[in-house]
Picture 1 (tube, helix red, strand yellow):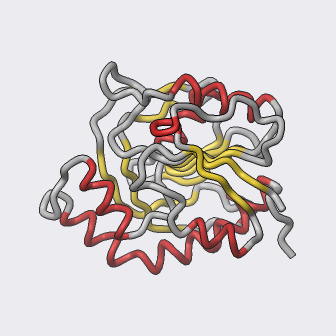
Picture 2 (tube, rainbow, N blue to C red):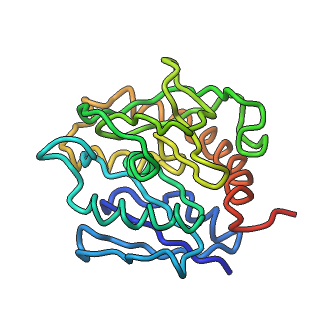
Length: 232
C-alpha cells in the first residue's frame, strides 16, 4: 500500500472528502503538522508522495503573514521533486510547490473565491477533469507559475485553478475536498462572520454535490498520474 505525507497547516483544513477517496482506493496517509510539532521529515527517500494543504490566512509573501515553516516545507518539497516523487499542492500548498519548482508568489490579501472553473485541455488529468466544475479557494497571496507550469483549468478571469509542473506534480489554487463545515471553520479562524461570507457559504452549500462529483472524477486522473494506485 502506498503511504503519503500530508502537511497540514491548520486544524480547520484537512484532506476533507479526499480522505474517503484515498481510503476507498487503498492509499494510506499520515498528517505532518509543522506548526504544532515544530518539524517535518527532511527527506523524501522513503516517501511515496507528498500533499501540501492550504493554510487559511498564512501565505508565502509578506513579513508578518509568511508561513513560519516555509523553509522546511520548501526543502521537503524540493527533495520530492528532485527524487521524482509525486506531489500535490492545494491552496497554500500549491504556492509552496510552485516556489520549489522555480516559480514565485505575489503578495495579496486573504481571499475566499468561489466560481466555476473551466478546463482548457481536453486531456487534463488523463481526460478525467470535467469541462466545468465549481471550486472554492481560501488563500492569501497569488501564485506566479514556474516556466514549465502547464495550466489545466482556469477561473472566470483566466487565472490558473489547476496546473501541473511535470506529469506527477499537480497543483490547485482551490481545495477540491472542501465542504461547508471546513469553509466555516476556516472563516472562523480569520474571524470572518457568516454575513461577511454569505455568498461564498451559499455557493458551497448549493454546489457541494457537484463539487463532490467533480472530485470523484478527477481523483481517477490524480491517482493515475501520481502512480499512487493503478486504476482498473
